Every structure is written in C-alpha cells, then in structure tokens.
Length: 323
Image (cartoon, rainbow, N blue to C red; front, side):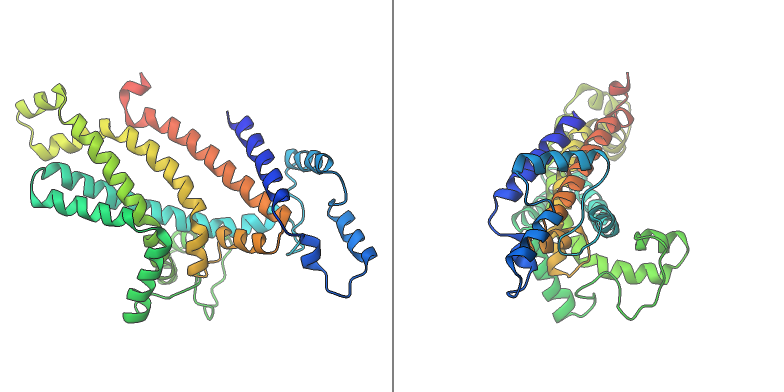
C-alpha cells in the first residue's frame, strides 16, 4: 500500500496547493516588474502550462528524485528539506521518548495501585496533559521556565555564539557519539521545552490506551495462574501483562508520532526552532509551491515507513504474532 498511498498524497497535495489563493510569482516580483518579466518567471517554474501538464511533470520529477527548485530560496528542494529534517526528527524522537517513558509509567502506576489515590493522581495527570494542546503547553512552559524561572533558553537549536562545527545535521546525536557531552547538554537545554510541549499530549494518549489494555490483560487466566504460582504482582504486571498489552499501544503511538511530526509546525514557530515545520510555514506564507510539495511528500514518506516499522514490530513484541 506504500506506493498508492504516496501517489494519493502527491495528487491531493498538488491539487490543494494550486486551488489555494495567492500567486507565488506575484509575491516574488517588485512593483516595477514588467509583464514580460512575470511571463519569463512563470515559464521558468513551469507555471505557464496547464494544470494537467504541471502534474505530469511533477510526477515525472518525483520518480527521478527531483523535487524541483524552491521559489523563495532558489535552491534544490530536496537538499534544503534534508538539511532541516534532522532537527525536526531529533525534536520528535526526543518528545516520543519522553512520552513513552511518562505514559508507560502513568499506566503502570494506575493499574498497579488500582482503586487507590495513586490511580486518581495518574489519571488526573493524563487528563490535564490531554486537555491542553501542544502550542499552549509551549507558551506556558516558556512563561514558567524561561521568563519567571530563566532556566532554559527560549528559542533556537543552539546558542548563536557557539562556534561548534558539525559534520552532520544531527547535532545532538553527533555530539553524543563524539563524546562532546558539554555541547550535548547545551543542545538538550534548547530541546527540552519544545520536546516536553510535544510530549505531554502524547503521554496522555499512551497512558490511557496502555491502561485499558493492561486492565484487560490482568483479567486473563494466564495472569491468575502466574499469581497462583507465587510471583509478585509487580513481576506479573511487567513480565506477563505488559508485553501482551503493548500492541494496541504501539499502534496508537506510531500513528500519533506521525501526527506529532506534523504538529511540530506550531511548536517550532513558537520556539524559533529551525526545523522542517518552521520551513513549511515560511513556504506557505511565500506560496513556495515546490517547497510545500516537497515537505509534504517527505512527511508522507515518513508516515509510510513508520507504519511499516510498526507492523514489523508486532512480531518482536508478541511471540504469538511471530508464530
């Protein structure tokens, strides 16, 4: 289904971008531009052809890995997208890691101490985290930890005065691999608030889905048998119930992770974080059609790849699926 999915995305993106109001050429030229200048620019970017001809050219270029040239940046679209993508991936995966750790912890707490105040506290935290959207969490975190308590930086990916030289765009991973832990700490300081803002709503989703699955698992006969054999309740919960409750959680986490990558747009804007979401906003403002198309296709490709990996992970999680 990967190929027809990507083809469908390409069709929808191409059509929606072109029916949206605004003329990218008109935004490029000054008031002194002549009709001949405008016509030359339209021909340069292929906007003088029919919609069907533009679409066929677009598909042909995609098949050859050519995403076109950005109208606003005047650079190869694929190259500029791949330059910004690592920043967004580091942000998204950091948020995912936080969400998984917090969500699993809340679910285990809620099930292990079922019927006690700990369950009420865990459920309350989940409800609050889910009720507030990412952008509002971002604003509150800035107010709390950058204004009232100036602990974390308010914007950017790294301090502009830092003269560190990176060989890849994966700054955090590179600094950890090369042992530059001081630099990694600085990067994590800039990453902390946007990652937490993205992670909190996903934390609530993971906690709720996993709790429901765990409650169903602990009522099964094999759990009662394990308890009868003398294993501690916590061991039974972790060793027997958790692996069987993970598949629905992994599914919903994978789906929400792809939404999380798309949801970085507002958070990246608020924190002036130089990722692909920030670039997508700029492309939309400037009516940069090739850049918007390229970013959306890359998002769709990430979505497809993640869903394939999620399907493959079922066998690693549950032996019954392997069999």
